Length: 125
Image 1 (cartoon, rainbow, N blue to C red):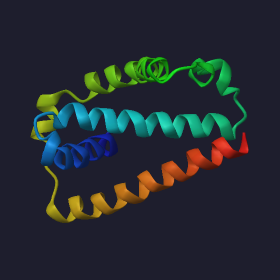
Image 2 (image 1 turned 180 degrees about the horizontal axis):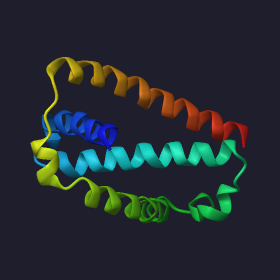
Image 3 (image 1 turned 135 degrees about the vertical axis):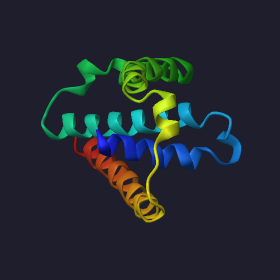
Image 4 (image 1 turned 120 degrees about the horizontal axis):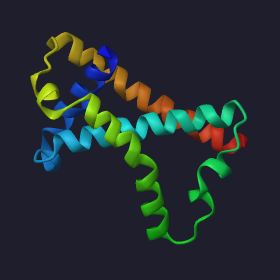
């Protein structure tokens, strides 16, 4: 749970600035949901699970339909994360400045690694 708290804190602080400063909590939840989904999808492909049966979005035509289907796939994960990490809890989280700086760099590498894994998984399937 500590890793999830820390990841949420990193994203929450990042989204507390700029154009997303009015919705940092939702933005952070969506970012974590997307990362978890990407890693789960890559893992399913690598262990040989047929993702086309699980995720029919691949066969759907039309951009709007794909976006809606994608949102419906992410929604359960988003809801679970929202229950596990309520906004009041996230707002109370605190970590040292050094831990946050290290975490920011680690998160960048983790995101890049996740993207690379999903690309490799898609190309090998």
